[in-house]
Amino acid sequence: MVRLAYKPLQAKTMAQISGIQDLTRWMQEHAIEDVECITADMNGVPRGKIIPGDRFLKMVETGRELRMPEIIYAMTITGDYPEEDIATDPRVIDINFVPDLSTIRLVPWYDEPTAQVICDAVYVDGTPVAISSRQVLKFVLEQYATLGLTPVVAPEVEFYLVDKNLDPDQPLQPPIGRSGRRATAKAGYGIEAANEYDPIIEDIYEWADAQDLQLDTLSHESGTAQMEINFNHGDPLERADQTMLFKRTVREAALKHDIYATFMAKPIEDQPGSALHLHVSVINKEGRNIFATDSGTFTDEFMHFIGGLQHYMAAAMPLLSPNVNSYRRFRKFLDAPINTHWACDNRTVGLRVPLSDPQATRVENRVAGADANPYLATAATLACGLLGLIEKIDAQPPVDGDAYSKAHTLPRTLYDALWRFNLAKSLHAVLGEPFVVAVNQVKETELDHYQGVVSSWEREYLLLNV
Image 1 (cartoon, one colour):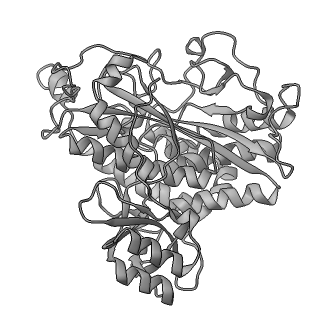
Image 2 (tube, one colour):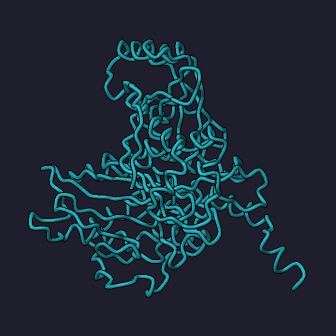
Image 3 (cartoon, rainbow, N blue to C red):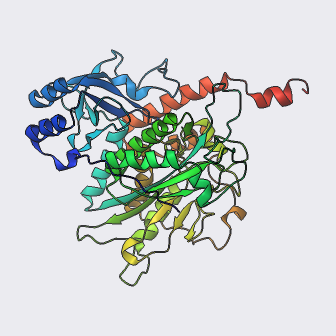
């Protein structure tokens, strides 16, 4: 692993500010001209409005609403809307954006001083919009709170750096690094391989620091020009917020250097896919990790949490692996799991338990793809574990050895995943029925669109042979 040196930008975030006077002072100190009010749609795409700084201050001071159409939460990855929309009001109504002032930050890559703030979505009567991905995660966390429990998560995000790809029919290729040569070999944990892209990585860390994103270490992953950055452990909602902003930051840093960064789950043939690994532990009211005793023995609660993940995670795959491309990642021996077996210190399983002190005992969900909406991947993981705790589901014995020698039990396609998702009624209750309707509507529309595309593989092997 390598952490590059950088010069921190001094940016006081809204987590340290209370009241309109502090907000005004902060915006004046940074000469903020515009504020981006953003939300994540179902696919994790940031959407919203840009407001002049003085108007934003007035909006916060007076409580005036910022309106957005509800249907943005039922938008497909292609930017289309389902023809048969039953998840949103047929009148295409407006909802209100409510800025979460604890999330306001600088946008460090603009020439003009600009701030960004993540917004919650509520109807005009103040009711939360249940199909908003941030609200789905909040709803799951509220259910933990009723049991006196607090989850803690740490995301690990993988991505590829690639040359600009202006023709979608052409395969992606690694960018030229500082050596002047294009990388051709896999370079897992290679220091020199990571240093090939020092200028980009320095910008990522500098811009992340300016936004108070809680990054930890960086490593070169197994794929050619594939990187992974780890976050520190923290509050699930904060980490989901930061992961969304981080993905945006990485893309902007790459573009500054005239290349692309992609979080596709499987962007390059015969290369490992990119994951969003989620480390999860659960704390009780006394501040103790419920997964292990003082001596390090796994508790019943830990085994039930694992059991819930094993029982429900295949059904939660539309949230963990939400795109048709996501399922290309699940192949043997390419750093992705094919089942939900668990074990300690074993990277072939879907549920890995890293070696740690008792208070740091956690489970790593290795199934989620980097293309997943971080709010929904976190909500799905926590929902499965919560059902395990509530239903006291027993975990299967840990696998001994190579989990690739076991059956492939994860869904192989998004069609299969949606079928399993619709059978999991208990999971629906934890996520919220309106959201379940929206997931089906959006993903079925995307699948219909995908079915209309003829791929290069079909042209190559079927055109003259069948």
